[in-house]
Image 1 (cartoon, each protein chain N blue to C red):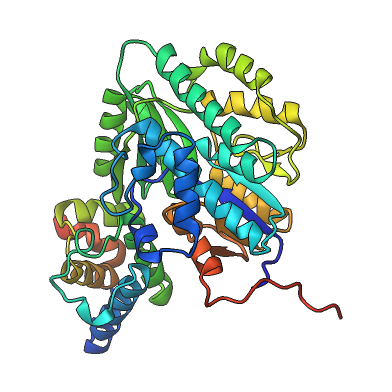
Image 2: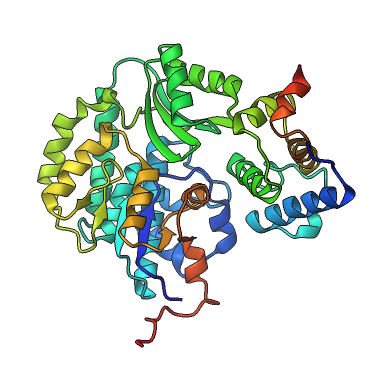
Amino acid sequence: MYLQEPAFVFPAFANNYTHEAKEALPGLEIRFREMLTLFSEDLARFDFVTNNFLGDEFLTQVITYAYSCAVSDMLREKGYRAAYVSGFSMGIYSALYHAGSITYKTGLDLLSKAYHDSVECLPDETFTMGTVIGLSPSDVNGLVEKYRLPLEIINQSSPVTITVSGPSAPVRRLLEEAIGEGALKTHILNVSVPYHTHYLEPVAVSFSVHARNAAIHPPTIPVLSQIDQRILHTADDIREELVKNLFRHMNSMNAHETLLSLGVKTFVECGPGRGMKRNARFLEGDFRFYHPSELLSESYLQPEEPPLK
Amino acid sequence: MAVITNDIIKEVKEVICDFFAEECEVDRSTITDNTRIIKDLGGDSLMFLELIEIFKKKYNLDVELKTIGKYTVKHPVETIGQLIETQMKIIEFENKLIDLEK
């Protein structure tokens, strides 16, 4: 199958690998487990069905990182070439791995430092993130202002899918009020770090040092920022982005639209789950969204360039 | 307000069952009115939202998501049968769905 101007997009994490258990893509599981082993042999015993380890917020990120790197390697080996890559939140590390900007081990190291530095900098308070489905950003913002909730809208992934982040009690209050306002569904994310909020600004100091010392190379594939939708070309661009990725808001809907404006016609969700593909159904534009299972299963033809006319 | 005919009921049921069979990769014949959307099929709220959009376009419905949200708080949807019933109400009453609660 030939993909026209594909963008490979990488999710932050998944809390369920049911689809991956069903698909059993040839060769993927071996590669995935080899990558997990590089973190720890214990984690390599992760099971797609029982989803052990997914109660641990950090290990969940590592598992998704390993899966995303493994699946994007397989796509490359099958001949699929990304015109752009973009990583959602902590998915930036697998996007950078695929773009040749960092090695797998450098990504693991930075992912670990980002998490542990973030946890250490937080005040003695509980934090979380939550998603509201069915209300617009202005509806959600209206609730935040009405109840003076100290939280932040940190992402919009469709016209009616909003993510908030901040102290646990206000996030839970917002979700309750959102249901009263007419949200179809709300849910708390299994995280204790208020990613993409000002609460993580203090991490910038220590994490900047890690980013500066890490072996980061200019990407071989253009990387699109989920924060401000600019294209990252240099190693310094990447370093700056990694630091901002901790405390700045994202807008994955704008990122999607920017990729479309750059000529992208197809998207591939390089990771477990189907969340990005599902959200994309509520976005406008002429594009197709694939999951790797649709491209890597043996029943599909090898990619070929279209014939020249 | 639309008049609900047997043809509409049949069509809504078919669209919903076909949708979940494809999305959740299950045999269409195993889906019944009693099938639980989340527990049995692994479905989620984005699927519900997508179905709403499908029916809004199909029947040219004038209904706000918030109205549907307020209705489903009082009439939770857990099974395929309940979803079909809710969808029929949305098609029949559109934005006046909210008046059913007054």
